[in-house]
Length: 546
Image (cartoon, rainbow, N blue to C red; front, side, top):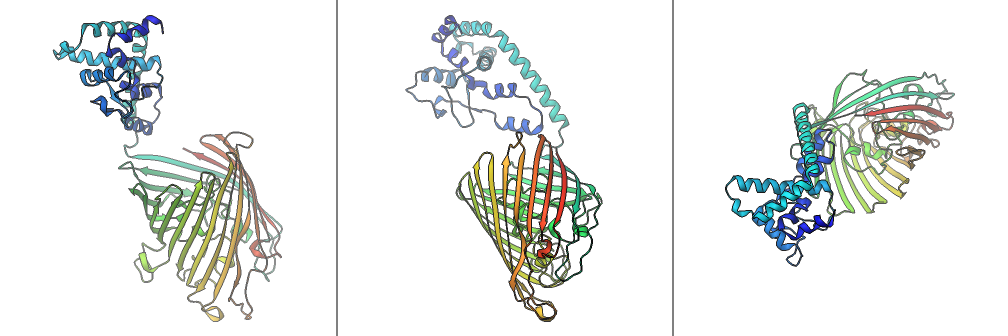
C-alpha cells in the first residue's frame, strides 16, 4: 500500500478497526472456501464469531498496547468488532486485502445503521470522510466480497434444501474381490487321509452402508446395512487359516440385512460409552494396535492378519463398552458382550447365555509407541456355532473339546505398535488362552487346554506413490500347545506341529475413494499338521468408499 494510504491510520480509531480482520474473519474464511457438503456447512456455522462488547473481553489485548484506546473506542462506541470464539484479538496477525475489505464493510454497515436510527451524532465527520476514502480505495475488493457472499448464500440455500438429513451422514463401502486357493491337497487333521484341493477362481462382492447420526455433536448412532456373496475358502482349503478378512462363512446371497446397531456418547471429557444393540465387536470399540491392517475393507487381506484373535471374543453380541482416558498417555477400556442377549429362552438372554467380559489398558508414552495389555473371560454354551476365536486359527484350537461342549476361557494378550518414521510402522501381538470344558462326554469332561498365538506386521507407507502401503505379516495362528485333552485311545491330544501365516500385500491408492489391493497368503503346515501341503491364496481386492 502507498504511504498516502497508511497515513489514514492517524486520523481515526475507525480506520484501525477497518484494518483489522476480526470483524468478519469467519465470513472471509467462508468466502474463500468452497462449501461442498452439509458437514462443511455445519462446521462453518459452528465456527462463527461470538460478539464482543468490551475490549476487556479480549484475552490477548492489554491496556499497555499501542492500539488499546482505538480498540476500546471501536468496540464500545461503534460496536463493529467481533472476536474469535476463544475471545482473542490476534492483533499481530497479517491480513489480506480481502480481509481488510471485510473489516471495512462491517464498520460501514455499523455506521449506516447508526445514521438510519438517528444516532448520527455518534459518528464524526472526520470518521465519515475517512471511511469514504477507504471505500473508494477498496471498492473492487468490496464488490468481489459481496459477490462471493451472494454466491455462498445461494450454495448454502441449495445444500439446506437438498441435504439428506440435518443429523445423519451416509457412508458407504463396496468391495469387489477376485480370489483363488492353490495347493496339492486340502488340509486335514493329523491321521486323516489326504484329499485333492479342487478350487475355482471366484469373483464376489460385499457392500456396506452406514448411517451415522449425531444429536448433540458428542454422540453417534450407527445403523449398518450389509449385503454380500463372499463365501469362505474353508470349504475347499479345509482350514480357517485361509479365510479372507472380509468374507462371510456362507455369504448372504447379496440379501440386505441390518447387522449392526449401536449408540456412543461422551459422559465427560475423559469418559466415552458405547452401547451395542446388535453386532457388537470389541475390535471396533477399542484400539487393536494394528492401524494399517485392522480394517476389513482397506486393511489386511486375511482374517488372521487384521489383529489379535483376542478381540474376537463375544463377537456379534449386544452389550456395553466404556473407555476412560484420564490422561493423554493412558486409557482404560472395559466391556461386556452377550451373543444371545435377544433370546429369552433358558440359558440365554443378556446375562445367562454366551458372554464375554473384556478389559484393556493402553499406554502411549509418545506418538510413535503404543502398547496394550488385554484380558477377556468368555463363556460359550453347547451350540455348534461356538468357537473360541470365531473361526480364526486351527479347527482344534477353536473347539479343543469338540462341538457342543460348554467352555469357559481366560484370554491374555499384549499388543504394540512402533512407528520408526512417517513411512515405516511395525506392529505385533501375542496371546495366551486357557480353556476349560464345562460339559462334554467321555475322557474330556472337565479337561483343559492351553493355546498360544502371535504375529508381527510391517507397513511401508507411500511406497511407490503417496497413499500406497506395502505390507508384510507373519505369525502363528492359535495352536493347542498343552492341556489334558485326550484322544479316543486315551493319549494326550495336541496340535502336532506348527502352522505359519505369511502374507504380502500392496495397497494401491488410485484416489481418495478407490483402493486396489493385490496380495498372497501362504499357509505353511495348515491345521498345525506338517503332513499337509503348503496352501496359497491369491486375491485382488478393490475397495470403493463414498
